[in-house]
Image (tube, rainbow, N blue to C red):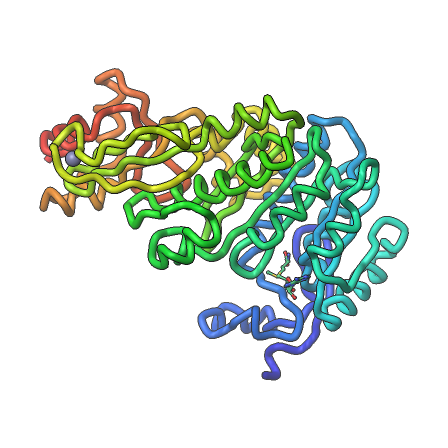
Length: 397
Ligand SMILES: C[S@@+](CC[C@H](N)C(=O)[O-])C[C@H]1O[C@@H](n2cnc3c(N)ncnc32)[C@H](O)[C@@H]1O
Ligand SMILES: [Zn+2]
């Protein structure tokens, strides 16, 4: 298709070559444009994902105060690696790689376009092979960014061998939302080793499944993972995980893997950390049969300090979309797990949906913690019991 020829694009602070639709036509053909069908992958929709990566890696560099060696083993046209070299700070060296020769050639062309040959090396290998070749002391990467088609799981084990054990950063994107959100349950169990659930908060469950799968993979190598920043945007989820070495630390992180009990009848939910937890299949609130998701991550999925630092970097660049997203994430950083979609609750009650602000105000006045969430519009995170939320919705009519 003529719309998919190589041309110069612009994103963040860089120009680069990629195959894709004419940017002028993009708004019109967006629906039918399939980035994975182009000779070399470039998806303009993932710009926000790359923007946040730039701000997060700047934050990571600021916190660790080290110069960074980064690997992006699934690079497509190379835009992410080139943006990190040009827009993040203290990045000494980046290895970018793609198995497809046309992608390798395009990424090389982009490195030359910016005269970055001294800082970026381009490879044309299988990602797992490349990572394994770097899985040695002093060779390991400070940051590895896995941004695949679908699930990052096939690359997790080799990424955990190739990332620094102490204060390394693993950045993971997953776009296989049908398995992670419970449409293809068996695919999720197969890939992530956990049961998903189709609920109003399935995107948070998806993040928790990806984190627990990563934590358990890391634990085999006596590495703990600490979530710094996680988000669900468009058709994907993304998480940034910091490494910490040692069997004891790994044991502590594994203790935060457990289950989610969800009652489909009354919307009660409860996290139960611990892989060997005993689980009651009767809802303690309404007595109905509960559903179980997991094993999944029951701990925090954000670090307030890291999100704040990342947000500051977005503010420096005046990036309104990223500021809005990171601002919401900061607000919910310490909020209770899972969220309530007011539209879904009201549908179940067969009532019109009151204004979100009104419900938030009443809950706060009643002394509850309540925040909005980046996961979904018109949704709240709160420590109020679901029965309390339902009472307030009824009263607010
Ligand atoms: C989603 S695209 C990468 C997009 C890129 N990270 C970005 O931000 O624009 C995934 C890429 O992984 C490459 N790929 C798939 N399997 C691979 C493998 N086993 N080793 C190396 N590259 C692979 C594909 O050719 C494709 O270009
Ligand atoms: Zn119940």
